[in-house]
Image 1 (cartoon, rainbow, N blue to C red):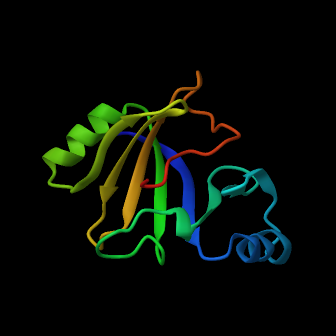
Image 2 (tube, rainbow, N blue to C red):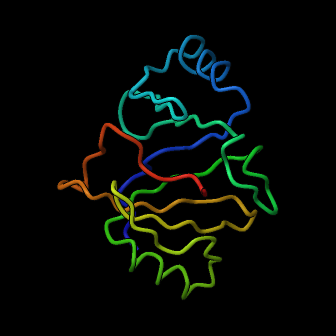
Length: 137
């Protein structure tokens, strides 16, 4: 598997406005993009993405409401998932095809979710201005 870069760290937050104030106003991270239920913050490279925990699916183990989902951008999601399956990695959700690209979710040893994302945009080595993965819903 060839990981191109860390795409985003997705934080499920209890209060989106309070978290936005902390990350943007207190820490000074610029807003890259903002929608009603999603905010991407950061200057270059990986983003911190804020998403309301109340909209996330329930999760057994480390709760999505209290944890984080790491977003990794990959060049070929099928080969990445196949490789991880062959190494005994638990697949939480197999490959799903969406408008922005293909996505799968795997679990780390502590039951934290890692979303693998193969974007549809032409230059797969360049981060888009939008989000880089999907929450588990």
